[in-house]
Structures are given as C-alpha cells and as structure tokens.
Amino acid sequence: MLNDIEIAKSAKMEKIIKIAEKINIKEEYVHQCGNHIAKVSHHYLKELNNKDNGKLILVTAINPTPAGEGKTTTSIGLSMAINKLGKKSIVALREPSLGPVMGVKGGAAGGGYSQVLPMEDINLHFTGDIHAVTTAHNLVSAVIDAHIKYGNELDIDSTRVYWKRAMDMNDRALREIVVSLGGHANGNPREDGFIITAASEIMAVLCLADDIPDLKRRLQNIVVARTRKGKPVTIGDLKIEGALAAVLKNALDPNLVQTIENTPAFIHGGPFANIAHGTNSLITTKMALKLSDYVVTESGFGADLGAEKFLDFVSPTAGFKPDAIVLVATIRALKYNGGAKEFDEENLDALRNGIVNLRVHIENLQKFGIPIVVALNKFDTDTDAEINYVVDFVENMNVPISINEAYYKGSEGALDLAEKVIKATEIKSELNTIYNWHDPLEVKIMKLAKEIYRAKHVDYEMAARSKIKFLKKYGYDHLPVIVAKTQYSISDDPKKLGAPSNYNFTIRDFELSAGAGFIVALAGEIMRMPGLPKHSNAEKIDVDAKGNITGLF
Image (cartoon, rainbow, N blue to C red; front, top):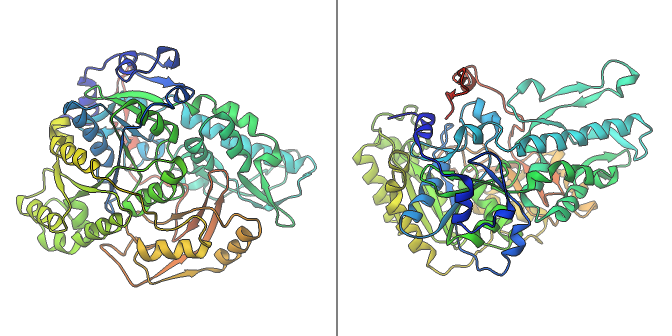
C-alpha cells in the first residue's frame, strides 16, 4: 500500500470554489487561498440563522496507545460514507499543530484513503491561523513586560505573571526560562517559559467566539497575572483586546478544504483536549450544521477527556448537542490496556484484560443519554478471533458495532458504520450533563471523579486549595471545569490502564481560563510544552528541488 502522502498526491482534487458551491456557500463569502483552500467569512453564519440544523455526530475514542487510534481517519471516512449513501455530509476537524507533525504522532489530516487534502498544506502552515494565535499570544507577553518596565501602573506582581510565551513546536528546553537578562534596558528579570500554541487560552477563545465583538469580550476577560495585593489582572486592564482581535480577524474565519473523495471539510482551530476543550471552532460546527444533513466532528484524546468536555461544556456553551456518538476502538489499544507490550501478534489474554477499558467508556457515555455506535478500526495485524471477541462483547452490551476499514478502502470501508450511525441519529435523545455549572466547584470535580474517572475520593494539594480560595473570592468558581489529566488512563495516573476504580484522584493546582469561560483543574503532570523524541518525524520529512514534500503522514 502507498504511504499517506503518496495516496494524497494521487487523488484528484476539485477546485475549492466547486466544493463551496456543493454546500451552497455564496461566492462573496469565499476567500480563495490558492485552488484548493478557502477561508469562509464567519459573517455568512448570520445569513443561515433561519435554516434548520442537520444532525451532529461526535467521534471519540477509548484510551489510546501513544500513536493514537484513528479518530480523524474515522471521522473523515464516516463523512465520506454518509455522502456515498446519498446524504449530505460535512466533516469538521481541528487544525494540526506542528508539534505533533514534527514529533511522534504526525499530522491530523487522517490517513490512507481517508484523508483531507491538500495534506501537505494542512499539516504545515495552512492558512496561518496558528501563527496568528502565536503572534497574538506573544503580543500579550511583550505588553506585560513593557508595562512592568515603564512604571507598572497596574502593580503587577512579577512573580505571579501566569501568561507564558508561546510557539507552535515541541521544545522542552523552553518550559522554564528567565527573561529580561542583560541589564536595565531589557526590563526586569523574571522566570518565564513557553507553552505550545495549541495550549494557549487565545486558541480556546478563538474557537469559542461567535464573532469579533464576542472575541474581544472573551480576550478582555483573560486573566494574565495578579497584583501584589492578589487582584486578577486582565487583558482588558492592559487595553489591548482590540489589537489582539485585529491580529486574529482572519483567523476567526473557518477554513474550507475537501476529503480525498471531494467531501467538503471544515478545518478550523486546534485547542488541546487536556488543558482546553479539544474540538474545532463553534463557528465551524454551527455553519456546517446549517449547510448539511450530517456533520461529523471529533473531540481530542479519549472519551474521558474530549467527549466529556464536549458534552459538559461545548454543547451547553454552543446550544447544540450530538445526535449520536461514535466510540473508536482498536484491538491494539485494548491489548495495550490489557498490559501487552507488542501488538502485532494475537494475544487474547491481553485483549480480555484490556476490554474493560471499552466497557467503562461505553458505560460513561451512556450516562449522557446520547446513542452510541462503536467503530472498531481494523489493522492488518488483527485476527478473526480477536475481532469476533470484541464484536461479541459490545453486542452483549446492546450497543451496535461496526468494523471500520476507511483507512484501506475510503468510504467503501465505512458504509456499514455510516448506516448504523444514521440509524442511531434517528433515536430521540436528551443530553444529560454530569454536573451543573452552578454546582460548587468541589462538587463539580467530585461528580466527574466518581462518574467518569471512577475514583472514590478527590484529594487537593496545598496549591489547589489556595487557588480555590482565589477563584471563590473573585467569583470564578461558578465556571465549568476542564480537567487536565493523562490521556492514557481514565484516572490521573498513566500507569493505571484498563478500568481503575476505588482510588484517590488528586488535583494539584488550578488554572483560570476566564476568557474561554472555564477553570482548568490540573491532575497529575500535564505538559503544556511537549518535547521531541530522540528520533522525530522531522528526520523523515524532505522537499525536492520542485517543491514536492515527502515524509509527512
């Protein structure tokens, strides 16, 4: 089989204006970025207000192996298959970060015969949205240091500046740094650091904003530091929300591309699902719902992270709910959760031990009241005995399951999944959230810990207890909670695989994302600036004299 980039290059793309015409986007709202990429003005959404919404399908997954289990590939293949069945479908995804592209996981444009195109542009600089977020983020950093140098009218405590700098790359050496060295002309030396751009609150804000006024309001509310008396200092206090919005103006517009089979695809925004809400922009999803019968979107990491946040935070914020949930599983991830170290040979013992992870995710999702379909992504190394065991297990839980081969066969490999998902969307359902936003902060966390993470108790370290007092004093405790934790376990410990229960869940600290409208509860060691491995994907990527790129996936 050809590799991802070879398959992508062999595909026949349609001009992007034709893709826009397919879904009735008026030409006046389309800004072409070459022949195959376009920006669609967010203002077009207001013209669509009177149109009915299509059905929304959320794709999530069990706890993954480090390489990921193919949620994006499933999302793309499912959307293409729905179109092949004669329906009208759009897939809506997040933009890839250059950190994973150059790191371990690779890009976020799908794979095999289930990709979005042009994959080279999407995986690299695309339309510059992430660069715009990086620039806006670092403008805030520069203004903070200039403000402190020139009189510090806001009385910012330089030891409590929460706003780190950002770049779209994995670079562990920049996690903890000292800035302003070199004498008085360079400002006051202080500890600082970098986060990866996808972890910036500005990325989360961009993906939640309805329009430019809402973007400015959210930016204005971002807390960047505290005064010497402990009072929050916001971007509004620095008076730069207008400048930030100007930098982000074009980045607010969704990006339109196409799949390998010419299905329309929106790719916009890229917040992480551990320190943010982990899905594409709300503008994109709302626009897609007005333009198609079925919208397929995904949430980052496993169902205990991305899906929980989508259902408890994104849906109530946006005013929509999924009509069906696709839970992606793989034999290799189940064996990984069962303690296996190698995944290429049949191992029914590891599969039996690890399948409890699939069970716990099904049970957790059922609590939200939305119909579920399990998609078992097929790999060449899966045996019939292993596949039959998983199918029987899921069907015994009275949940439909489909063997998904979109990676190898494109839409043809996902037709059965599409039929089962469409059937699931016809079941009437109501979204039941795990907690109420107005619950006390500790109650919200306890409900999540018991219902989703299966813990018996929540412990708060000293820093977390101190931050709770701050959040309550300044009225932020009413905000919903985003729990930042490992993606490899439903617990706060990546070594607790399968379905851990009856343990203590530990919150070590909190971070406030007042502009995005949530509180981040930090459980375990969460990296906001990843590092590169010893041998990274960057070693495999190349470009020839004609500009043809190789090595991307």
